Image (cartoon, rainbow, N blue to C red; front, top):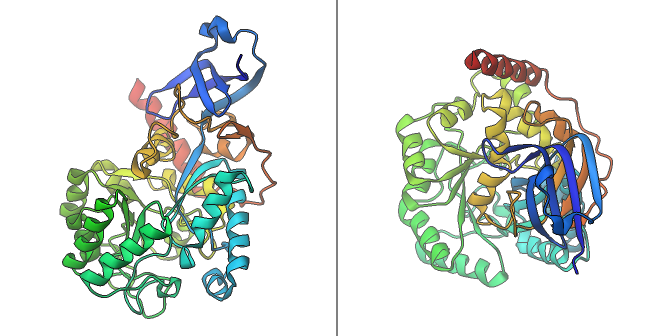
Length: 418
């Protein structure tokens, strides 16, 4: 006896390149995917299961937000408010942020920095079913230096031995991974994003200890020196990776990019929904996302969600920005599903529609493989097999540059097919 349900649509996309299935079906049994394939080949064992058909829709894996800050609400001055909140107040913000992401179709989120490891509590509340939200992977408070970027989150150390102890303390607190600020950041006073914060010896101490404990390491890194040290130390993902030099001028180093590729490190470029407007205002600030894509960097989707001006609900706007920056739409979607799952260490569990995986899926109205904006129109959100009714989301329209980039890509694909 099963509790199977069948979902069918004009298109099913499995989460990997070239995996589109026309007139596809997904069978969900409890919290697991039981079968995926063409609807015409549905196994007879599921023939009598309740069926929902989404005409004109696309079924695809639940989306993954690889770089969020659940403790930030996305409004102006959010970091200042976050640092001033009591612990119960901050947990309330994080629960609201998680629900907002789930409403946008995000069924897995990696939280990369919150005060005092409170994100561990929120993750557990979601896992217990007390509140609704995506699957959460937490880094706890970002490891930084005395007075370094996000020092207010209370994870500061200044020597290899202190850093090893701090990693062990985070492990004891129950975090899923370690986040280190390899460089300064734009949002902490007296913190220069183009300068490295740790020596290579210190970075290596963090990575070695984290890996010994079975935990991945995500490194916030803007400037070339910090990126280089993160690569040499063996981090698992690099966040931002802007190659910013003094001021806001971008100066990508091709040899370092090639080192990233050779090392198999994933990069979350945090291409936020409002980045196109920032680039128009400052022509010197042009993150090298297209260059990294063309040289083979494994790019994953993440919006730095929650920081000033970047509410969690604007997730799809970040995917549109990646298209503007020159990444083909299907590659953007792979970076938001299967490739992100690989980077986060949850491949096989989520990120793909496959037998035995967690029943994390969304149904978009339209074809997101042709127009990623279709993900703004969700007709179904299923997280670990449970349907979720999204809250109404007030989000800005796509940036004008998105439509031009999308149409240019479509025209180029048609030309290439001739």
